[in-house]
Image 1: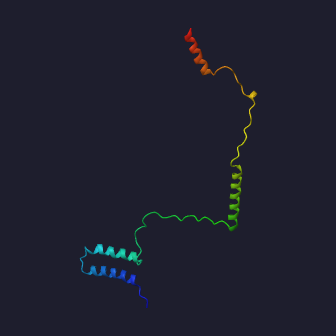
Image 2 (image 1 turned 135 degrees about the horizontal axis):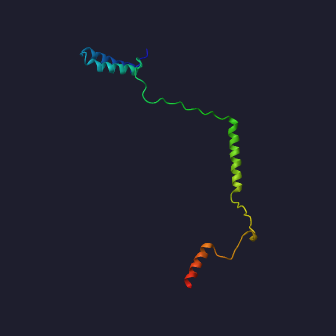
Length: 125
């Protein structure tokens, strides 16, 4: 026969608590009755009347695993994009040359500079 040692130890604790009840008065029995109830809940012999403490944990959504063939396709697509990037590295795009006719060049100074020159000229006279 197989003997389950942990079960007998737990039963021993319950037996000790019940033995303590015999010699106690009615007023002092209540805490020990609560201990017995807790112990029975721990053993699974009695269901707890208390609500579950804490939050209920949500089950995580399981992501579907991709098919075996798509993994290779994704790798090839990644390699192609890396090749395109590598081809573009080191190249400098040519800027369009601007024709001097398109730029409006005046020999006059800017407005700010013009004002300072006028003020300086007014002090001379």
